[in-house]
Structures are given as C-alpha cells and as structure tokens.
Length: 499
Ligand code: NAD
Picture: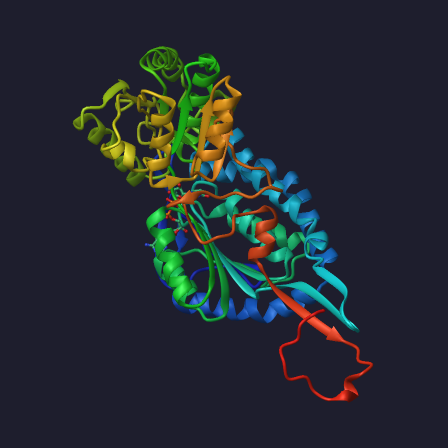
C-alpha cells in the first residue's frame, strides 16, 4: 500500500509518528494509501527549518520571488492532466472539475506575479521640514495554512502563493483525506526555483494543527474548513497572539423571483446544487422561489433535469456530471440528514438514496436529492449538508426571501435570479452575505478581487486572495526620517505635529 509522507526541507520524507490515516478512492470504496499524521515534534522541527530559511528568501528581491511564481504557473499548466488525475482519484470529483480546481488556484498564482507592484509601499516626500515618511510591507515571517478536502489544489495555492511571494516561509497542513496534490505542488514549487525549507507540507490531523496553533514561531495562520473548526482555530490562534483568518461553512440561498427566466434558473440550480456532489462552500443548497406559482413551475422544470444527472467515477471523463462524496463517513452523514428531512415532514421530490452504480457498488456515490416545502426549523435547512441535496423553501414575497438569507447563520454566498434590475440592486445592497450573484449562481470572485463570506462563514477580518492576501501576509512598517539641518537646537519635548 502506498505510504504518503511529508515534504520537508526539499524532499519527500516518511512520517515518524507511527500514526497514519486512510486515504480512500471514493469511486471504488477502497483504501488506496496511508497518509502519515505528523507529531508535534515533526511540526516543531519543520517550523524551525522554515524559519531559518525565511530570512534569505525575504532578502530575495520581489521580482525574483515573482519569477518563481511565473515558472510555477508554467509547470502547473504542463502538469495539469497529472494533477487533475491525482486529485480526482482521492477526492472523487470529475476530471474537468479537478482541472477547474487547479485552474482557480493557478489564477491566484498569476495574480501573485504582480507582487513587486503590490509590495511597493507608500512614500510622502517632505511630510515636514526635512522629513520624509514611508511605509513598507514586510513579511510576517513563518505563516501556516490549514486547508480542507474539497479543493485540494485551489485552496493550498490561495494560501501558499501570496504568503511565499511576500517573502514568508510557509507551513501547509493540507486535508489528510486528499494529500497527494499538495505534495505535488510543493515539488513543482521547488522545480520553479523556490529554495528548500521555505515551503514545508506536513500531513496530519488535530495533533499537527494544535502544534501549529501553539508554535511561537508561526506568526499567522490561514484556515479554510468547517465552521466549528474555524472558530476553534481562530480562538486558539488569536489567544496565542497570532494573526488568524478562518473561512468556514456555508448555506447558500438562491432566490428565484417570479419574473426570472425559469429555464435559466433551473439550469443554474442543477449545476450549482449538484456539481462536485455539492461538496463546495459556494454550492447552492437552498432554492427560494418567490410565490407558489414560481415554486410549482420551478419544481416542474427541475425534476427532469435532476433525474437526468449522470453520476459516476472520474474515469468516465466528460461523461459524468458529478462523482462520489469523499469518505464513507461523509456519505453516512449526508444520508442521515436526508432522513431527518423526511422525518421532519419535508417533501422528498427526487430521492437519490437507492442510487447504485454497476461495477462501483462500494463507491461513495449518492444520487441527487430534491426537497420541497422545507422550513427554517428543519436540520436540513439549518445545517450544512455538503452533499447532492437541494432544499426548496417557498417564500411568499421578496422581503420574506431576503429575510431567509439574512437570518441564516451562514453568509458565504447567495444569488438572485430576476429580470428586475431594481430588485437585484436592492438585494445586492441589503443582503448580509459576502459574495452575491445576480443571475450568476456561484459568484466566486476572480483572483484579483477577494474571496470571503460574512457571519459564521468567517472568523477574522481580511479576505482571501486579491489585495487582502498581501495585507494578511505582510506587516506594515512606517518610517519617519529626518535628515537634519537644525538638530543642533536641542531635543523636542512635545508630541510632533506636522504643520
Ligand atoms: P474540516 O473542518 O473537517 O477540516 C479542515 C481542516 O481542519 C483539515 O486540514 C483538517 O485536518 C483540520 N481539522 C479537522 N478537524 C480538526 C480538529 N478537531 N482540530 C483541528 N483541526 C482539525 O473541513 P473539511 O470537511 O475538510 O472541508 C469542508 C468544509 O470546508 C465545509 O464546511 C466547507 O463549507 C468548508 N469550506 C469553506 C470554504 C470557504 O472559503 N469559506 C472553502 C472551502 C470549504
């Protein structure tokens, strides 16, 4: 059986803790590898080596650091097929979707090529008599990233690329469920010219995460994952004096107004609800048609589209719409929530529970589910299901629909489908959610904007990627410099004021 270790000091090394976790092939249901789970001592040693390497990397001029990113982009494109195959084999998502996972990470690396410009700082000439003032952005030192299973290429790249190009060393603790791609990314970074030890990829579970949280050398932590863990990491990291940003779970509502193009809305819901088996933090999991007639027409259009979805293994290439979920535990959890919806009285319009695929009976496949007449008190509405399950909550009016999205504890993404510019504009202005789509179901901002939710979908203040990432991974230092002509006159005892 393959044993997956860590990437430390520029090479793959085996774990030494004696602990490991199963890595599944979700399509076949087999354990395909064992991944090492790092001990506190392994984390501490890797962080110390990263800290030693960081000074030299920070002293490398920004243009040279950016050139490493430029070459990394070329290598990602060269190895796209290989990365996508490894990703799909451990995650289960389709090959085109796995390529999208790599691509959306790659775009953030492209943005990082602009680091020399983004790190330029500010300068005020003659802020006072003979006084210049300038602010510069300096790396925070050693940063760490703790990432989820659902985007094993994109999110590690969202974390590592801005951190590294700013001159930091970086400790990546990827999800233990699909650890292969992050290790391949580290190899490509080395090939692109990144000095050894500046990037360490260490696999692990809670023990490794706690060792990161308590390590005094690590100055900043970027986390993406579920909300309870996000909150835990934020609180413990902050209590230890670190800069921390944590992105959590989601329950994204799509509001369908009576004037919407319902064919377009139904297509959007099917893609955004069931793509990647619903294992996306920007998946639409709640459809909110406004008015009974809209709801009836929408359901009528949705059912045949959902029933026609092709579920299968990634090896089927373009012939599948979505694949299995990631682990048997994920499958059990999703089916348990489906049962709770039935028990609570929601109407299961499309039932995917008995889905089975010939030749893949042990894979973690779940057929698509559509619930109608879901109400806000139900668990299937309150909780993040993270599976191919779309819930419909019927709203009597636009205000009622807006209130649903506003009252939900999560605030990652949301969308409105309408032909009415006034309603769309009002929605975008008032809704308390971080990313809003207008006739766009998955409004993931491009690399040069920033990504982040509101409410319980985030802990911390700056967003991911875009200019915010450069703010998160640098500290501002402001220098006030006087080249004196009159310092002989003696010291000044009142607070200086620029006149
Ligand atoms: P998860 O919270 O289970 O795991 C995320 C990371 O935390 C992993 O590296 C894992 O090893 C670690 N971890 C897990 N349990 C821990 C514990 N008890 N103590 C310390 N560390 C622990 O999340 P997941 O299942 O891998 O990913 C799915 C979740 O991520 C969903 O909730 C999804 O909405 C969310 N997500 C959010 C965003 C976003 O940008 N807001 C993006 C992608 C995914």
